[in-house]
Image 1 (cartoon, rainbow, N blue to C red):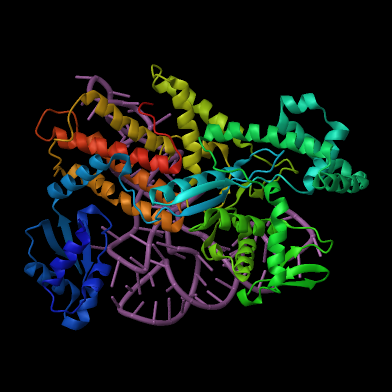
Image 2 (cartoon, rainbow, N blue to C red):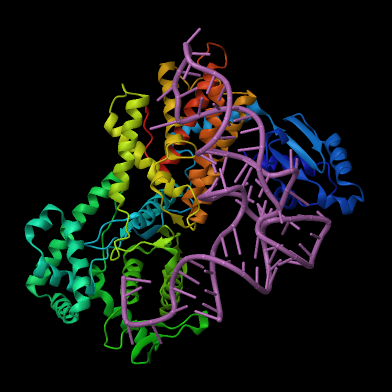
Length: 563
RNA sequence: GUCGCAAUAGCUCAGCUGGAUAGAGCAACGGUCUUCUAAACCGUAGGUCGAGAGUUCGAAUCUCUCUUGCGACACCA
């Protein structure tokens, strides 16, 4: 039932066509606090027509409005405030949530369309840092949100598994590395070799030539180089997967840059055929004046390919394989200009799905205001941060709930949940200056706070035992519960908006709002009391549990039943 | 230099398409566990919304200028 439409009608019946139905509907707003009602109509726009003071108009209209289907309608200043019928409203919402369960808020807007998401994309032989966390958890959450909106996301981990750096790495390994060390601790040792290469390289520039030759051998399919490359890739992926497992995130494909290495000719050919590729300073570029962009460099002057050459191949492949409804790239905001260029080139090529290509940028993670970089050693290892969080959660459990079953599992869910939630709760574009203590907070507006609220709800339901909520009267006129009821109602809209904006933070903020209102509710009202409202209250608790769990799930955060 | 993003309480941030006294969380101070897990709840204190101008009945929100910070500006990804 659309309550906004109901209120619109109530207003229209006391007007004489001064405003259209659409105008009234559009002007309705949600008051700042529930004390001012559930929906409000500002009458400013009628002041000129009626030649009266707004507050007079409001009072006048209220006296004419049929109030029988509301708890109350009142004039307050220039506003008409509508208070919905709590009993009827709550019965409706609670019934919906309990009937639909975790499917509550699901919609069909995506019509099953495929949406490849370019995300995570760590580089082989380098550690996963906090920087990758953002792309990974934002991409994962957007995938969940897309599913909730009827799309079919394809999580594509576009690994950085090709390029001249592998020439360097292979040279470095041959000179200073050994099999045993790599087997013991792949990433750390491979990075060590790589860093050493860059140190030595300053004194012995001939190393660069050697690396170039080695990469050439790799490209030509030379057996030894291919073998090493495959091995590095394999051990790196194994290490990555341990972290992804900890995060509870998986992917549909791992088609990295190497996968597209032999698929670049087609894109280049199309550009040539369309006469888009022109020479500039020895290199091949596509001019983008039409888009008010600088030319995009497609081939280096020595004919070598670039990042964009591979991305064009990738786009063609995805276009053909998935017939995508949208193409998403969850990549840092520092590449915004690059993605404008990529999109423009693809549009020029006539690639259909380029129209719905969206770069989903996010802010930088810095330490003391400085950018992270593997080479300089300014890096925050994600694995370490996750372990710190899990250990802290473990400690808290020993302190607060030592008899808890499945302690290790819960500690993992809470610790990891805190990190993921912490990343997702703010707008994507905000930069984050990394401070470990900030990440390891479990109180206030955090993941654990929402998890705790859910666990408390579950705890009440456990204590209630077997009660048939299906048959229960769900009409709950209790004003203490009202904030929670209205929050429950908002969920389907939040799901739609978060999808429209590609903003997981909207879900995170919503979950906090719902959790907060519920915490307040059960702190002030005892649920388990034998009276005629027991079934309604338990229905509320159950509904909150369902929606909190589903909200967290959309963020990629687990919701333990006890903690 | 050009383009993009940002600037709101001591700190970290909300504030939807302009609307009613600018909101949270941390930190500070005080209160609440014999009663559904105190990872919680309640209260106190804290703000010329970077500056200036404009549009409007009405601006933190829209437009312009300026200041400051961050980022991007072809042979890296």
